[in-house]
Image (cartoon, rainbow, N blue to C red):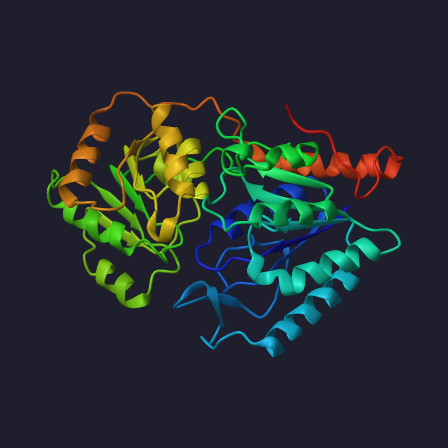
Length: 390
């Protein structure tokens, strides 16, 4: 089974990290996977051994998601778009995939419609079209513009299924996508995409502070360093700033390093570090929460909520309701409040093990394999609806 997996990350690395884990599971299941990326390069993603095609990179400019720039910071223009579109369509023709897996779209990533809509059209018009699937997290951003949900439903007419990377016992897509009932026959819940059970590590930290990709984590790190001064000085800290934290800020935090404070940009085995720690302090992004759940450590979450973001707050609140995290609002966060939450987490006895499905990567691979086998046997055809998960 040949799989072409398109993923466009623009700000953080969450989309790319989740896609990379799914790609690894597909490869382990015997698929030939090529990940096509369109964002700035991130060391370690996709994983070594996974075929990778990097389109000319785009990222978010100073004005937000409607302002895209290339790797040199120049505004993306029509010439740039035409070049990327041609490269993407050529890649599709060369790979001739059995499955076209597209991350986020059409629920998000409208910025790349200029190349995805032609790609989907070419795929559908092929004599033997591939299965086309959307890969989406379980909680979507709320407050979408009027008519946007209807556009999403219309676009999904060209998709065979939607992989919803969540456990429906924890969160269902209709909670953040009001028109979910209209696409119910195409929904496939996979469970949460998390890393494998963490490998043992000899490192021992009381507190692991992680800032995801780092693009929007500097304020949390700064506040945590202030909170550290209010806590016992014998606590061991490990700070992961994220690969996208600007270099001057990384150097400033690195200058604080000591015997009891380690500072890194990135560590591959984050779940392992968390498993050996007493408390994790982080935002509430999908992948970081997956690491926390795998590790089973106490968690203090400060969900990213600037610019009207709602997804992390909803996830954090759901975890808090299950007793799996302490949650502090980003707005008005103080060192004193963060220090108090860390004290509470340090004083908790035992570790809450979530009764949630954390095997989303492997389940995603199984679903694709079963759909492809069913298609070969003639029990489903490309474009036909698939049965929903209850």
